[in-house]
Length: 459
Image 1 (cartoon, rainbow, N blue to C red):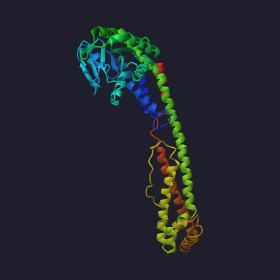
Image 2 (cartoon, one colour):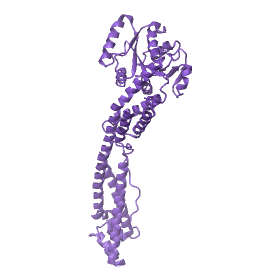
Image 3 (cartoon, rainbow, N blue to C red):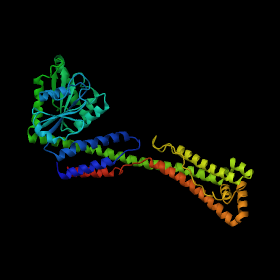
Image 4 (cartoon, rainbow, N blue to C red):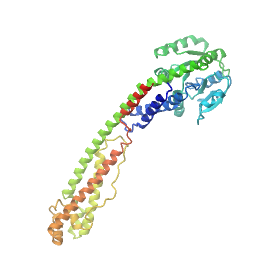
């Protein structure tokens, strides 16, 4: 433990987890994003720093429910007010860290955490008062849970009226799973119900697999009276026993680090599996988009061959003898054809991608071949080498002017060019929709398992 090899393996795992993302809203993606963030935070906030500084004082986080008396307990443990306590909820908006002056260098100044120095803090220990875990403020809840993940041990504060709430039990079970050293303070217990409440909480702890966790009840006092010293002394002693002796501190660190390392076996494989599902979903989505745009391209290219673009305005202007006007109408019909193809492609591929992944777009203005020879353009959309009707008439007039073989070659070249422009426009739109599925994980999940195996061998 604390070896350079293990630290390097964990740093590599951390980088691989950070490079893994879950952009598609496939089943399990929301949970994977949360688990990824929590794992990165715990590696950054605890495991890597603790391995780099194994002799640093223990960090005991005092957490719990709204109004449980966390700040009051911290003040009582130190012997003076170092963090504000009072009836306003939530009282603790800014986390407060209290340590001895000689230990200050271990704790880098961080924005958003207040630092207090006091020699009455148990030796080898620092106390951190965090916001309530069930705060009405989402930011407070997030800060509290993150700081709990950065601790060597927890002092969890609850009350006679709140000990059965769901929010704390989720975190208590998490502490059990990660083998975090833990003590529970049952605060504000009326004397007449002390035995019954304590017995019920012990029962719940045993059911949760936490029967060996020390429990410290504190009787209810008058508002502003402070906590009874006789109830605070056992908690202060519990802290001192773990902080004063280097061997005891090392044992706490080994237990917490070991529990977190063991938890990686449960936390990393699901992330790898979630990354794999992202890749599978991308493959399915790409195939779906490709199929949608292949069908759309076939429809658009057929429209270039069947003479339908010579209906409407183009036919009317041709009948009036306005060849240039008929060619302009053909170009307008070509623009409308591509716009219609974009809409059809978007509709066909709507179910391929997550909602909101890509917005519907209109095609950019396109340069159509045949602008220099309107008769060739009109003939090219009448069918290959001129179809019946207007297309054949345009081809015949062009052949009379430049010769039948040159006219046929020119019409065919323009026709191929039109198909190329339409196909390229739709292929670009297909690629844009596929690109909406990025960024993808740097790897499909196998890299996470490889990094986890390296951590296992290094631990």
